Image 1 (cartoon, rainbow, N blue to C red):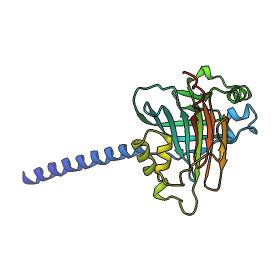
Image 2 (cartoon, rainbow, N blue to C red; image 1 turned 180 degrees about the vertical axis):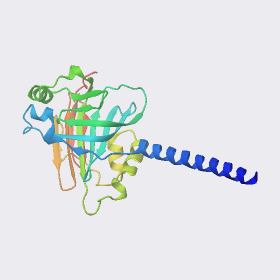
Image 3 (cartoon, rainbow, N blue to C red; image 1 turned 135 degrees about the horizontal axis):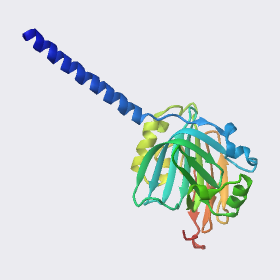
Length: 252
């Protein structure tokens, strides 16, 4: 009788252990962040037009963190490859939420300087800055934004950080640290500067008042931005759209 009791108790513990292991495995799988692959050479969109006029034409496929904030009015997509960290930003963006939302999505992003397209198996988003450059780009690549959930922004931004010897796989650019900053801050400028990768720029090295777009690149960092009426492009350590006090931003 005692022997049977011991066996039954042992079986219960084994069952509990198996359930815990299965649950743990599922949780790890849900939290898995798959590094993106550069799929630019296979891009149907890039094949349909001429990319020579674009500064940062890129297509990436993998895991993305998708942040929309009603505080900063920004939508930010973050992903990483084995060698680089990427941010794609819609500044002063039309929002599909009235709160801060952070989601992890699997899919593909195609960046076209003045717009970017995010596609998953079940949805498609199109973010764009409504300026003369966007119209030319849309014609060039035969973009039909009516087939997507479309969001107009005051600007479209791109930021890429390359891993170098002194920051390669460091805590600064670890996935955990970046996701922590995304959870803590609402605006891209705050997220970027919280990583302490470069000094804050006091001015525009490229762009400035009167400029609707600009780009900049060095060994570690490259970025570009395209801005709508009512903003000007400013590129330093970071590329952003700044409200032009002399021009009223285009209402959404």
